[in-house]
Structures are given as C-alpha cells and as structure tokens.
Image 1 (cartoon, rainbow, N blue to C red):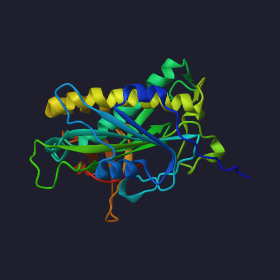
Image 2 (cartoon, rainbow, N blue to C red; image 1 turned 45 degrees about the vertical axis):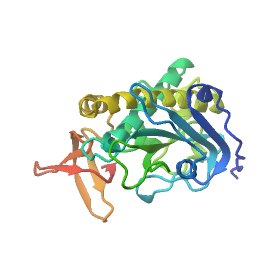
Image 3 (cartoon, rainbow, N blue to C red; image 1 turned 135 degrees about the vertical axis):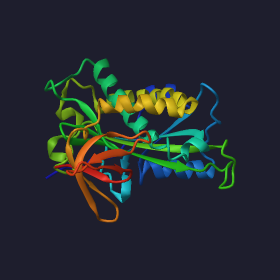
Image 4 (cartoon, one colour; image 1 turned 90 degrees about the vertical axis):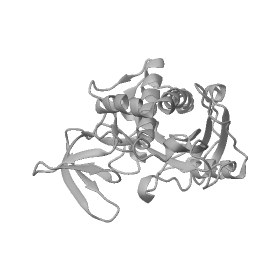
Amino acid sequence: MMIALKAATPQLPRTTAVADHVVAVDETDSTNALAAQMIGDGSLTLPDHQDGELAVAVVAADRQTAGRGRNGHKWISQPGRCSTMSYAVRIPRAIATDESVNGWLQMIAGLVTLDALNGMIEEYGAAPNQPDCLLELKWPNDVFCHGLKLGGLLSELVIPPSSGTDADADDDVVIVFGVGLNLALGACRLPTPQSTSLQLHVSGLPSFGEMRDAVAERQVEGFRERLVKFIADPKGQAESLREEVKAVCWARGRQVEAHFTDGTTLTGEAIGLNEDASLILRTQDGTDHTVRTADVGVL
C-alpha cells in the first residue's frame, strides 16, 4: 500500500535571495490560482518593468489539490517529490496580447526550465544514467525525457488592479508561469504510464528540497534575463528563440497527431515552428498546416 505523503511549507533560501517576492505555503489548490488571487487583491505586487530590469515573484506550494494544465487538464503532484511553482512577471500589455509574438512567452518558459534543470544537474555533479538522456520540450508546454512527461508549463495573463480592460497598450499586465516538475518520484508513484521523474534518469542528485530550491533560483534568474531581452526586441528575439527551440524540440521530425479542443485530429510530421511560435505540421499529401492550440502526441 502506498503511504500518503504529508505536505510541508517549501524552504527556498536560494530562491528568496534572488526573487523580488516569495510566497510559500504547504498546500493550495493551484499556485497559479493563488498567484492570480493575490495579484488581484493587491497582496502580491510587482513594480512596473523598467528598461533592463524585471521583477519576478514566486508562489510555491508543496501540494496542489487542483493543479491545472492546458485545455482543462489536471496536473497531479505529490508533496516532497514534485516541485509546484508559479513565477509572476509584469510585461507590456502590447507584447502580452500581440499574437504575432506572444506565443514565444510559453517557449521562453520552457527554455528557462530546461536551463534551470540542466544547470542544477551540472552544479551538483550529477550525471544521466544513459548518454541519450536529454531534456527536451514537447510543443507547446511539456518537459520531456525519453519520450515521457517530466514536467508541465501553464502561462496565464492576469490584469493587476492598477490596470483595466480600457488601459493603454503601454500599460503592464502580469504573466503567471506555472511550472510543475517531477523531481523525486519513484517509479511506483508516477501518475500515468506516460510520465516520468528526473531521479529515474539522473544519478547523484541532491535531496528534493535542495533540487527544488536550486531549480527555482535559476528559473527566477532565467525569466528575468530572457524576458528583459524579449521585451526590448520581441521580433528579433523570436527569430533567435526559434533556432534555440529547434535544437530541443521533441516533436520535430516525428510523426505526430494533434488533438484539437473541438475533437478533431490532424496527423503529420512536425517540421518546425513558425515565426509566431505555432507548430508546422506537414501531412502526407505534402501540405503544411499551422497548429496553434492542440495536444500533440507521437505516433
């Protein structure tokens, strides 16, 4: 019989040292929902972004009772084994609502997460169990390892109290990036056959608490660095991001099936990303299709 794990308030000294604000609780329904609530009621505030500077707030919980993924999916996590964090940043409304570039915000979250995981592994001298044990991104919001889901990302727009629906395009809005990572789950605790955990692929890792803090610290710094550059030059950064994502895109070159919210599907080869971060899917007849919102699975 599997023993239930007890939630405890995350201890995040390294993250606290670099973040502008950290909220840590033992349990909540969703860290994204808690962050949005606190932003809405004014208990979590972030200064307006300035040229070359960006504030990052963190909301962390050891257990989520109603974790959410894209398209209404649930994110199942276990205390003391899975990192559940949300990172809140203020960016210009014009960028957050511009469909020609805002898809890259999700891709940035993925790249920040890969950088943080790989940096933590290197810092502690850990090593993959197999030479091909690479961390990749499954478009648009999953962290994959060996074709299995190790983590999920969810970005949501929140309007701060100081703004409104009629605010100027130059006003800031808040983007909340939710990041859930299976760091220390044993094989018997994996929620689905399609999921995995970092400790199953990498040897020499530190304790879960150290991992969670080291990864979160790097994510704060990564969001700050990458988003400052993106805000300064969205179009230019989009092109360089497309090249960067190409190297870690799990779906690229594979036969995949896209499942849309209306119940339809589309099968083809994922050949790359468009300038707006949408996926290019080439069907058997040689036609290229643009996929903007779908779950994508390999065949």
